[in-house]
Length: 219
Length: 198
View 1 (cartoon, one colour):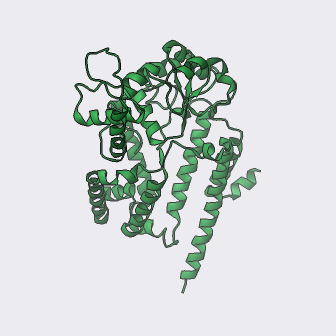
View 2 (cartoon, chains in turn brown, green; view 1 turned 135 degrees about the horizontal axis):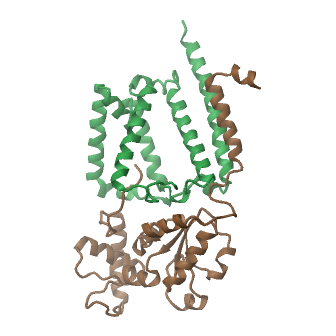
View 3 (cartoon, each protein chain N blue to C red; view 1 turned 90 degrees about the horizontal axis):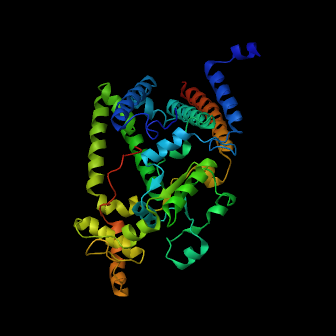
């Protein structure tokens, strides 16, 4: 065996090493297997960094772009889900059924609901079960309503405002103006119809995103 | 210690610039050592005389791939936090074609042009100026180009996910592709060298 190795050139030995490593990797499950240990420090860091959350407006952008690399899971009770408004493409999966659903372990799973504590608990449940790509939609259905469907637009600059109006019209809402905490204005069909062409224009035109300054990634 | 180091807060954004600088130095050094600071060496890839570009790049790919696989397997790296460039099929095909044409005509790709600039090659400097001028042009024309730039969004897709294959199978397949590619490259080089003999 050793003699065989000494006959090979360095390149051939490296190729052999790569082959063996690749062969062993056939058994690799880099996205964690079924046995898990919860690393408390790691979870705490995720929470402290806020990297376990996705903003409602980011989610809105993803839906409008037609991205398909995430699953949006609404954990409210089926009755509440059916009765109230829900985010387009959301699947209603109660917490009790979450782990039996065959979600892929490396899939991006976005959790939303109307009870922040319940959503956080569902997130922990997924993390503990080895789903490394679980995220919380920040603020839940309330944030979706107040920041995406009926956003406040007084006091923001014109470009941001146009984007907010377009996004809100895309989801059948309308922006709010007026005293803080006021109830959403009734949306007339005319407002929505008027704003609809703006969506297409803004999404293809050069509108600035209102998203907060984010760390640049990639090259 | 868990990776990605930045995401787990092992260091902050300021330190990450220092880390990026050090990695950049290493990358430039490796490019220059591979001979990629010379347009002659790079372009001979396209004449099939010298397959060094193919071999070096594919070696880098499988080294990184095996490293990432094993690190995440032993639980040191959280793959779900590694940034993936989102796939936009149409603009990336168009961009790849433009880059390929630029590579053959200009003799450099963006990274090697900077490596060539560092060693004082004038063609590298000119290519670098063109690189920044093109970037500026793209930025100024962005409102016109945006429909193309944002066409066919697929999100952050990976091959195992897309083909519904186990992760390890894709890793092994890429290793086999690389080894087959290296053998093929050696054969092509030998063939071209023979045909050039008088």
